[in-house]
Image (cartoon, rainbow, N blue to C red; front, side, top):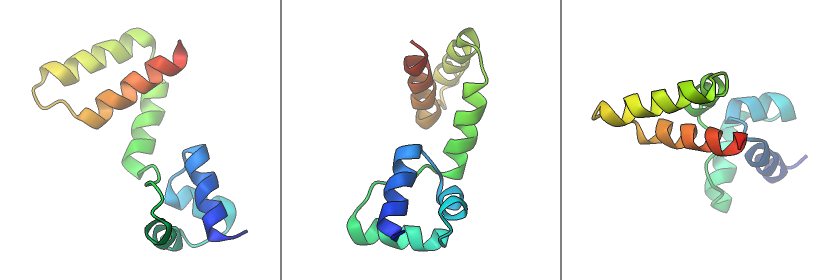
Length: 92
């Protein structure tokens, strides 16, 4: 499998570079080089993968209250709010 193909599959599956490297048997740092060479969009970061996993475990009401906390905190992490909205949209 070529690195470009592995990168495209990782994008489609929402994998991190390390997860893609382990699954496809390629060096994860080489995937970063492919990203830059072909101007591919970025893969999911480790932080986003952990956040998505924790948000996916929440109930709808918990997600909505978590979003309210992020928004009213004043330091709302835009990335987490987007992940919450994405998860709620996926559940509908």
